[in-house]
Length: 257
Length: 227
Image 1: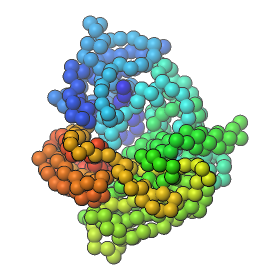
Image 2 (image 1 turned 30 degrees about the vertical axis):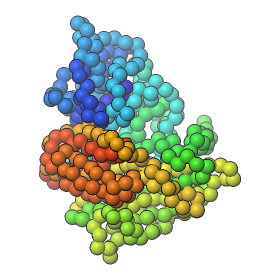
Image 3 (image 1 turned 120 degrees about the horizontal axis):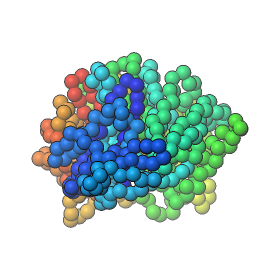
Image 4 (image 1 turned 180 degrees about the horizontal axis):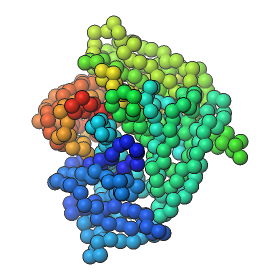
């Protein structure tokens, strides 16, 4: 079960192209696109109307919907009322596939420059708490404006604050500390921050997707997400190795408090 | 993945190209320093053409945890315009400790001075042990009998041009069909091909997981993405 989303960026629109088939080529029948939004202290689910054809839903996300989330489900999911209230997010569909079910997220600006990547936000990440750790400089472009966009979806309908840091692993110092929020597009401007080649980004207590966007000075846009650290370690000791690195970063961060 | 008792450095297959004004940059993390805090353990970039003939082996700088190298600067005198490369980290695990590291770092492609489009590694394909001996088995499996389908989850009809970089990660001569295009790739070779105009691309082969990297063009813009 995956959720789809747009990015709330000042100068770019988000377009989602959501497939009606799996990577194996199997059609997903009688499904519709739904949106999730926070209303006071509950989630409200409504059917999302958008352009579609036999293979895709095409959702040019409006300003009003930019902080909402989207998912596929059986077309009668909301019943006759056309909407549903729930207290927490859970699995709403059961799409069977050996691959990760993804939508194309494209951002584009008024000059029609665009960039995209195959995106999803897995339910597994929505339900869990934890820490995110990623290096930073590999996804930045020199002489451009660079943003770290941290997309967070949490299973409860709350905008809860949590701390994030940029940590220099060579000097073992915190370079930046910010407050981000659950169920939000959080943005950290990386311009004017020095020595990013030795820095990592650390989110304390909540998971999310670090997405890096470059734009501005030169023609074109760039957008890519970073990998979670355990993707780089394939041996049985991967969680031990990654935990040790996270503990090292947590120790550096704790010196601030 | 390697399932013997040895430590391995696993590499994805990364595309490089310098045709038509492309500049390829590889942005790498010193994974051994980052994860295990062991410094000055070497990282090598093995540069090959599409036929998997090694053109050069380059030792990467390790002045930072993350750094980058311009592939075009390494290949100025070479006639080949594109190919693939691998990254291997020298491993010095503790006695009786098994470590398998996968390099799936990021490559960027800039076309005629545009903002580089960044994409992470695609598929793990080759591995070397701590003595630089290659892992002898396939990391991505293939079937002798059945074909696998990989249908890309995007609509490509709006683009003027779509190119696919495909690498054969198996030790067999692989027959590949993309829509109505049929071609073969020898073991561990690659190809960049322009795909016919279509809204959907379906890839059929005996490889369990054959996912290309796509270069898409519209008007004066281009982008690189995973399938």
